[in-house]
Image (cartoon, rainbow, N blue to C red):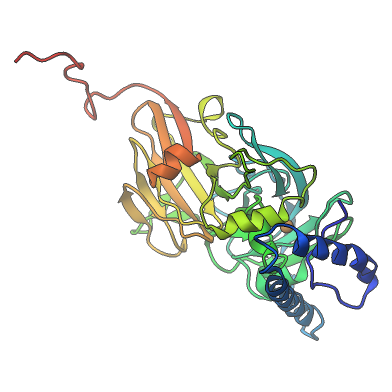
Amino acid sequence: MTKFFNPGLMKTSRRNVLRGSVLAGAAAMAGAGAMATPRAPKLAQANATSAKLYKTAGQQAAESTAVPADLSGYTRVKQELVAPPFAPVHEQVATGGPKIVEITMETTEKLMTVDEDTGAEIWALTFNGSVPGPLIIVHEGDMVELTLRNPADSKMEHNIDFHAATGALGGGGLTHVYPGEETVLRWKATKPGCFTYHCAPGGAMIPYHVGHGMNGAIMVLPRDGLKDAQGNPLRYDSIAYIGEQDYYLPKDENGDFKVYAEAGDDYNDSLDAMRTLVPTHQVFNGAVGALTGENALKAKVGETVLMVHNSCMVDSRPHLIGGHGDFVWESSFSDVPLTGMETWFVRGGSAAAAMYTFEQPGVYAYVNHNLIIGAMLGGTAHFVVEGEWDNNLMEQVVAPRVFAG
Ligand SMILES: [Cu+2]
């Protein structure tokens, strides 16, 4: 198909050379699907308005005569981002003064398997090729300096909205990149906590891109690290970074998941599927079983894991079966953490952190405790924990047996 940009974003610029393909794409959208046709004109109008708002907000910020940022006192460091469920190398307590943390992300469009058993797949829209996008970790007061690159062979434009950032739609208004373009955005991390980031091109393209995997999390640690209610330091041995992804995969008349030749080809069908608000899959880290079985997370008795859970659109209720949330931050790291939680809450459009020290070996399931989602839609991860069993905490006193009478 032709390159498939967001309708309504064009301004008078060199980018108008792309206008022909945009209009062709819009026409194809309006004409496809009996369900979509009656709604298409209004939808297109709403999307165009939304997209223009997005663009205008960014332009106004970029074209203002504001004083240049004062970067004195900052040192520059590069952060190598890694694929989930892992976290980049970082300090829990910041040493030295504030940093400008340089990161690079590519907007990669790729075919991904969602469920091997059913053959469900999606032309995922990603940051750095993974769902969720990579975890970024900085400290309060640091600057994040992102180079956002859209490969030339992409079909779509992308951008990024950081919920942790302030102004210009979280940077969404300043970062629209067409295929073959790159942009650099710098913003100051003033709010400690875990936050979602996501692509937000405008209009229905926002849920379309987010619903195709284009979201992730940034963790902004306090400079002196995490603390309990009394101010005692809380430290972790590892991070498990879990991204909850709701997919709305179109089905054909036989109930089979449809397959598409290229990214963007499923646009009309996806909008119809998303409009139901009923996901066909709600998975951890991009696919059913991405964090179970051979892909399970690993830990040892006595180790403390920080579970960072991102969910960009849907609410989630993480629960560690057989364990707890010793300390849970559903909100800012400046707030006193919740303690001893059985299940915690991740508001759709946010990320949260839960800390737990394993006390028993075995397999722990980390689930969305809407168990329909956990067991039937894919919202399950496993921790495999090694160590010595503690009979003081639990013991099978009598194995199951037939009882008399
Ligand atoms: Cu995007």
